[in-house]
Each structure stands twice: as C-alpha cells, then as structure tokens.
Image 1 (cartoon, rainbow, N blue to C red):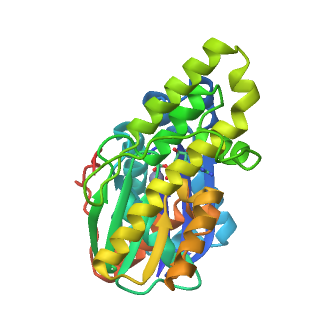
Image 2 (image 1 turned 135 degrees about the vertical axis):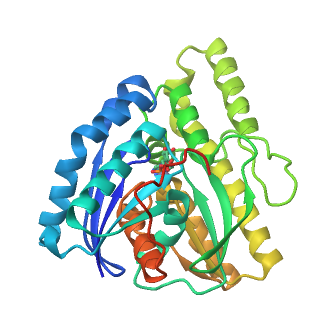
Length: 330
Ligand code: KG4
Ligand code: ZN
C-alpha cells in the first residue's frame, strides 16, 4: 500500500511517503520561530503549519518519486496535540484525500511514537515494553500486539521532556532545551550535584521535585557567585540529566520485571538523548533483554511514524470519515 502521512500536532510540520512499512521519504520542517519566545506559541504554530503544509507534502512526494495519483490512503495525526495545529493537518489530509478519492486514516500521536520502533530493520517482538518520553508525555506502554497498547505507568506531574525544557530555560539555554542539555552534559561531571529521588508509588513518575531542586540550586548558587551558572553549566546539566535517566530506567526495569517482558524499546523526543540511549542499551545487555532504539529521525516528531500506524490501521480496515474531529488530550 502506498500511503502519505502528515504530522502537525505541535511545532513540526512533517510529511512522509511509505510503501507498507518502508519509508520512501520523510520531510520535517521545524518551526524555529518559537525559540524567540522560549516555548511553543500555539497560535503561531497553527499559522506556520498552514504556511508550510503544502510545500512539505509536495517535497515528500518529490523525494519519494511518487505521483499523487498512485497514493492509496492519507494518514494524519488526530491527537493528542495543539488543537489549531492538528486542525491544519487534519483538514488538509481530508481535503486532499477527498480530492484524490482515497480514504484517510486518523492516527494517535502517542501510539505512533511507540510504533516508530517498527520502522527499524529489527522489529521488536511481543509482548514489548516501551518507555515513551516526549515533551508532553512520559509513559510506560505494554504492547501485547500491534493493536493492543496499554499504559501501565505515567508521570503524575511534568513530562521528562518538560523537565529538560524547563531546566534549560532556567539556565538561559535556547528552546527546545533537551538537545542543549544533552550536548553540555557530555562535558560535565554527573556527580557534581545531587538531585532528590522522587518517591512515587508503583510504575508512575514525577519530575516536579528535581525541577524545584534545580531552581533552589541555581538561586542559592547565584546568590553566592553571580557567575555560578556560567561556571557550573556543564556539571549542572550532567547531574540533572543523569538523575532524569536514573528515574526513567529504574521504573522501566521494575516494569519489565513485574510483567516478565524481555523485549524493550524507547520512543519520543527524549529518546534522542544520548545518555538515555546508551544506558538503556547497557541495562538491556546486563539483563539479557532484547532492545530496540529508533533512529534519531524517528524519535522527535515525524510523519514516518504516523505512516507506519496508518499502514497497520489500513490493513485492519480502520479508516476515518470526513466528520472525524481532532482531540487535544490523550
Ligand atoms: O516527541 P517530541 O518531538 O514532541 C512531543 O510530542 O512532545 O519531543 C520533544 C521533546 C522536547 O521536550 C525536547 O526538549 C526533547 O523532546 N528532546 C530531548 C532531546 N531531543 C529532544 N531531550 C533530551 N535530549 C535530547 N537529545
Ligand atoms: Zn511527539
């Protein structure tokens, strides 16, 4: 099946063309304009999607060397995400599909992050446990089959990506903060500063405590020495990032033991983090578990992951209709 996929849930306008689960093209236009405001401005995101969507889709078709007349379905992100942003992608996808006389496939963005792992040459086996860590979500997802995804743990406050972004803002780093902290942390000492371990029941997560602890560390440090941030930036990033990874992997390991799962994966924007990737692989090796890590291009928001879910749903005949309305929350 030849399928076009469109992603527009947040600040990436993306389109991909897939033949079944093989990616023929994957175009991403990141809205760098939000950096100026230190975070995503929903209204601006909608306008930029509107401006970019036609160009991005044309580019995806051109890269795949596929004429639009050969497309058999159009998959698009139906939520969760920013409503205005989702409406642009959804409306475009429906109108285009209607014009071409082909069906649409509405796709859940969080499911797509998890199933992005099935774009990799070595497919995970079932049951699979996936740690999904993005800007808005932190979830442990037990995948029993391609259409059975159960959330068995999640954050009770901030998402892991939010913990990175808020820390970066506090340290005066540009948005999005995750990649900046990742880079600085590689030259810092992860033992330089201590952050508290949150006490959260079961398989849930909490990141608000370490964020507050960072706020106090920076406030007290700056009171004593006004160049505290400049002098200790790399050490602060390394220690803070190390703690986030500790928290994530501790719960992941516990969940895998509890459910007797041997196939593990990570997903979402934060899965691009180099320390998380390397320590995840090391954990799986130590425990004798099979591990899948998505390519960098499939970690942060992209349309290839929307396409793979679109393909799976199309196989099952789960097409959308033109009255489908996007949703904002999972
Ligand atoms: O999945 P994603 O692209 O968008 C959402 O669905 O939220 O995730 C974006 C998040 C942001 O919080 C960003 O700071 C974080 O992923 N991120 C990273 C890295 N790259 C992106 N966090 C840590 N290290 C990275 N290398
Ligand atoms: Zn995402």
